[in-house]
Length: 234
Image (cartoon, rainbow, N blue to C red; front, top):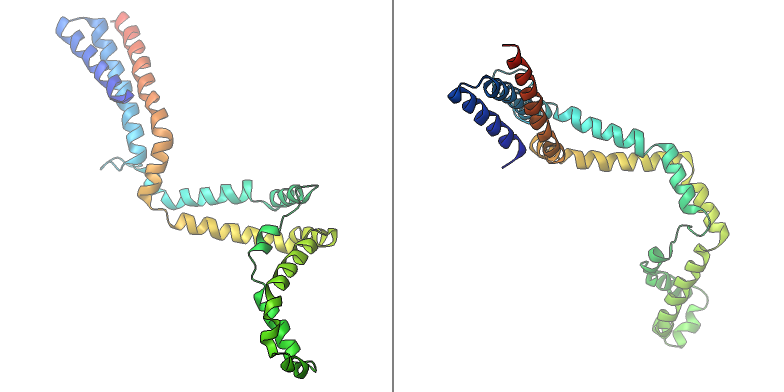
């Protein structure tokens, strides 16, 4: 049983007790407690569900597009601003936290580079001499050592200050920051377009309904107190 049900049930029980025993204090406390609790419960219910005849109910599903736009605006104007992106890049590129390209380079296939080299040699003035030694096939034993050496050389180059500074300048350029912002905005748009009104309702419901249940509890408590005070003047 949730807090709302318990509060409403307790208020109704107190109301019934006051009516059956002709106890004015219990009757008024139960009546006002139930009034406060049920009103707050209805208000919470109306946030998520459309109630026929009640204007403004189902506000969260009804304002679905505005809700998505608010999320996008929050993300772009508070998190992914040009200043924040620039600050992040400066932090990542500072000191020992330079951009590490080694994992990327290790995934690059350098075999085409060797094949191009062989093609250049074959089509050059050395082609005839190479043909006498067995042609392009004679160079195949050199392929793996070449690929490994080429990969290591590119990794070493990527670690140089010249490359690091060039990357830093490129990443911090206004055009690059604008491109990053555009890419982030596209990703956010794609994700938001996947949302449905039902998903938004359930998402917001999961976040706040548990805490909104306390509104029903306190509505019942304060309603009961007001009922007791009212009964004292009857």
